[in-house]
Length: 340
Picture 1 (tube, one colour):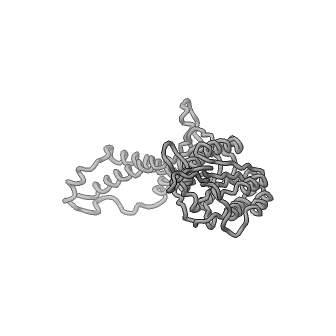
Picture 2 (tube, one colour):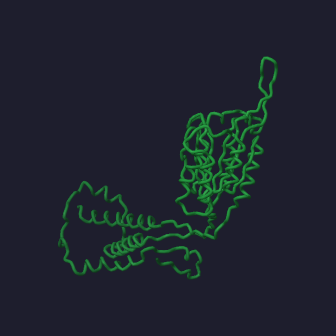
Picture 3 (spheres, rainbow, N blue to C red):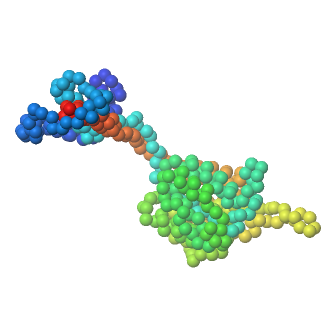
């Protein structure tokens, strides 16, 4: 790789040639002409087509006879070699924040997540809609983390493998639908799947954020044995139990107070978090849920490494385009000389 020198022009230092050795071919046309015989002796036109004369007369020409054509052919050859040398423009250095953390979100999409006991602004929304709103903002803040998404109901499945592409992870979270994985809740399976996905990465900064509104009612793995395996593998789990503590429903005898989160197993979620060195959080409304994610930002800080990146833009198409243009002009000149 050859970088150009500034010569008093600072911007020239951002130009470089990836394959400068291509210029060794510069004398190739002269060598071919010098050591190979002409294909056709000169002296008369190879083709006579008087009806093409008006058309060719209207096409561009290069004045100067043979010397002008030779100059144009030399420039075209030089441009072709420049394109083949792969010129590039190297941009200014850009800092990339890379934390090295692998973080998986496990979101409950069982039937109970359709309960409407959250508010976003003045609008009542389902629990899953509230999670999408707040967790989506949390995802956008995780610059430098590799993020994954697990959705679980009767079974758990990976919706998004670990990726730096936060936009895609957020989009797939927003597209999650209640009941897509079944009506029940397989918390143990979700933890086990996260352990399986993260154990092969050999990364000390591995985090699972598990969000549910119920108890473990499905799946092949019980939550606490799965948490023990996670602790053995060095996976930290933060658990979030969501759902309002009280709501009022109309009955024949007036409004009756109920607990929409009666099935939430807070004790189990607390034990899972403590067993793996994480914490348990309780989100009764959208405001508390947002505060929890803000707290997670502080508990799992974004550790920045000093990684710098210089964007590179290819420039080969500019000399290639000019070479083709000059070659076209030479072709027209050759045809004009052979058509009478």
